[in-house]
Length: 465
Image (cartoon, rainbow, N blue to C red; front, top):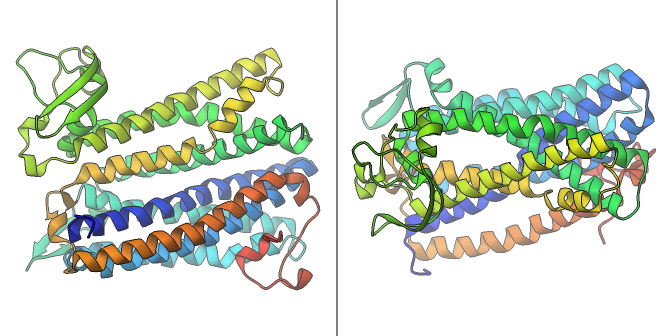
């Protein structure tokens, strides 16, 4: 169907579902920690603005959490339906790691989420704050197990292959594989940064419409301080992550750099712009900065890195996609650093809230963190191709035995359902954000309050007509 093979359709469907799913856990991780900070500040200072912001963002957290759970369940089922040979080959590693996530993160969140969302007037302030912290910790633990599983697929170790199946022999090595620390830090910081950008954009939107309340001011100030600290830190983590990729996945790194060939004695330029052509094995219309890739990746002006022509064509990832997805991520990261630097200059001038151009820029940067997360995820996942488990199992050997017509119809159904369900959910989230924290002032909510049932989405009381 569509002129695509069953393998290509299975990859597109998994990429489509994970693109929806990854957005919601990223916001959940960032918002959970933000809520813990807000409640901690309220307990320490007694300033009602922090409590007001907590009630406002807890509604958005609840809706986002619900959509994340639903999208995650759908994605998990695809391991059995679309990638059964992968599950048969590596399920002894990925299965337990996902089970550990349920036994630790999900149970922790399930135990304290109800208290966090509905217990404000039902438990003491100390217990409620503890519940919020536990939910935030649960989101980070969940990310840890998921990234341990994904990182093992990128840099597998601690296993033996017996009778065509992976057998774990060292769980410490499986979990703490070479790329795991870098991926965990990179993704966690990306979640904090994406959330800070979303909060800053919300505040900027309200300020541009003259909703200049203390809560809006506090929201903007806190989020911008987070961006100032975290955006440069993310660039440093990304640099270390790139060096790790060079050591363990050189073909991916060569695709990121668009580097086709090493010539004796020549350094590697940084390709700022190009149209990589896989059949011709060259970059068209390239704009290069001499020596810079050598300096970044080898810390010398004449160092060389593995080139794409050193790998067989069937072992190379899709170079144009990897090349450009990385540049989208890096370009947006540069704009985030610029946003933070601009905010510092405006603070110094005492004009942080009075610059229409800055507020407009902050508003338009709102979705940039999530776009950068998606671009980074495409870089790392498409860059791993043609391997499902790097160096051990090719993607073409992992896909289930389905026909292209079956997968094509299923893909169309998935697209229609996801656009309807999650499109409605995202629209509702935007409606909540547009109402602003003033609408949440004094609202406690909870099971039995206004006949609300006991479920996370009940924390958002606004009707969606």
